[in-house]
Image (tube, rainbow over all chains, first blue to last red):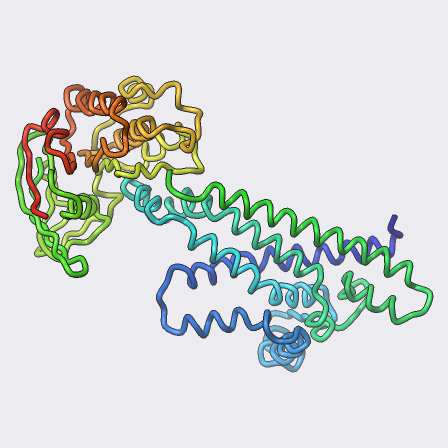
Amino acid sequence: MLTDAEWQIVELSLRVSLVAVLVTLPIAFALAWVSARTRIRGKILLDALVHLPLVIPPVVTGWLLLILLGPGGAIGAWLDRVLGIQFVFRWTGAALASGVMALPLMVRAMRLSIEAVDRRLEQASRTLGAGRWRTFFRVTVPLCLPGIVAGSVLGFARSIGEFGATITFVSNVPGQTQTLPLAIYSALQVPGREGFATRLAIFSIILSLLALLVSEWLVRRGSREGGIV
Amino acid sequence: MFDLALTRRLGERTVELAFASDDRVTGLVGVSGAGKTSVLNMIAGILRPDSGHVAVAGRTLFDAARAIDLPPEQRRCGYVFQDNRLFPHMSVRGNLTYGSGARAGGGYRADLPEITALLGLEPLLDRGPRTLSGGEAKRVAIGRALLSQPDFLLLDEPLTSIDPARRESILDAIDRIRSEVGLPMLLVSHRADEVERVASRIVRMAG
């Protein structure tokens, strides 16, 4: 199986991906909600911005993050000065880059599930005495839960595989930002480390495959359960 | 019991209805497309009338002139939808108890054993809504509305899409609510003969 050093890389990858998904989750749900249920001005622009990481090269996303959140960046300098938060060369920066890359996938899955919620059920809930919030938590959220979970799993799989934005934004620092893909890439640059790269590659394939299978299963279960009864 | 005057424009046509009824069970009859469901939605607070007023059992729920427009959850209205709208992610028991305790204050109070006995729901409690027949789902929907501490009931085509053999059980349930519970009811149907058995007053809506 894996050596201690390899486990350390796996542990870092899991930590980066889990934190990325957990922090992105409420943001993605809020954006999905705005996209599915509101008619605000500039929604098309907001949608385009959210989907940008999906269509531009990941290296460009990483570079934009560096410009904005790097030590000399507009937001990064302020965060460092006022709150003492730094991202560059840190695992938190890797999580941020992964979160940004996962965001469009998560928003898409969640938006579809919000759109699929039958609003007549929400009306029924209101006539039964439940206010907006009670209806939201007891009817809407449970009904789009498969989409929320599927989006999170997809985001997790995307984060596990994240390379371009991470290496550009927070570099390739062992123990801090060297996640699975970066460690595999580094190993392939050095002759004789193919075994190490192979083991990590197999592990990352298994992780991502598992995540995708879980996501697929949840989506199928969700589509079976939707609709009026 | 019911005092309504409602106007609402829906696309090319206008839904209009005005009547006052002191009868406990009022039937609202009209051809399909006459706007009967829209009227119920306006009473329940799901659809906003363009003008008019809605008062039930002496309580004003909507009055355009006085800018009164209670949200659906404050109207204390037990609405039995034509398509039942049972929550698919909850058991029958979960559906029945969903509205109990949600409202503060008045309304008809009944507990779960009382309603399950009244409507014969005991054997269904742990089943999922998807496994119910049309008649069973309708009785659950009626029970759910009764358990939400309502001041009145709205029943939208309660006999449509129920096979003839089961219609009797739904009519029996409505009959028992009328005689044992005594809540004001507005019963909508496209067939006058269906409502004549239980309603003491019939209001006709032009198509």
